[in-house]
Length: 335
Image (cartoon, rainbow, N blue to C red):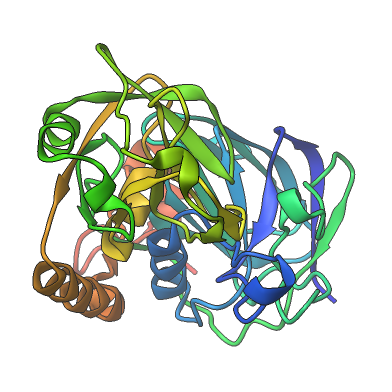
């Protein structure tokens, strides 16, 4: 089986797919990729299913080597990447030749990048998914020297790119009312919407702390709430009024009051806010949220049609003379 050799890896890199459903009653949340849009982008660039597993790279990537010629795609938060000495375009697909080294450095925007391979990362399934769920100790982070198996690749095309998405710079995040929204009075809800938050450095796949100036956001009777089901996107308010946005590996139940829940269409944008960057929230109606979801799904379905041939920088092409750059012209090789 084709494999990807990991020579060096940044902390916290994991195999992720769409996660697991049906295990909330057993205390296991969905997990899966923090940025599902990135999974769909990689699938479109490689012409394969969005359900295949990829490497999720929070903050930085690593150094990899293909055991055979393979196809790769790079999506999510842009990172510095090279194959040997050739700089790669992000949000695009490329061919990684056997023995060549792929180096992926730190993010230049956003928070989490993704490395996809043709055929998907084929590590063993655990509870019907390949995703590592670190909080539940299902699987583990990738380590130096690990060899990652790759599934059969039925495609051949590379050199495709997608337009750069605008989800990496924070900004306004839409949310709907939760079961406890009414415990926050109108003044507190209005102040929450008017506040610009900064993503704390203390964040992981379970959630992120949101810092702001001024007083906290208190709920009436917040200490009397019974523990109940929570989901990714819920914004819990701790006892001191500091909000926490729950992410893919959130706990399954919680007793903190929730001022609102980020709509699924904006979860990838929320997940990509880097530490120190700002974001804000605004309430939308149920109808607005459903319309946003319809448009979001339509956009994901349209991604294969949005793929365009990658325009390469001639200075980065090692075998430039082998290309027919002008119609009617040849490489000059008499053969």
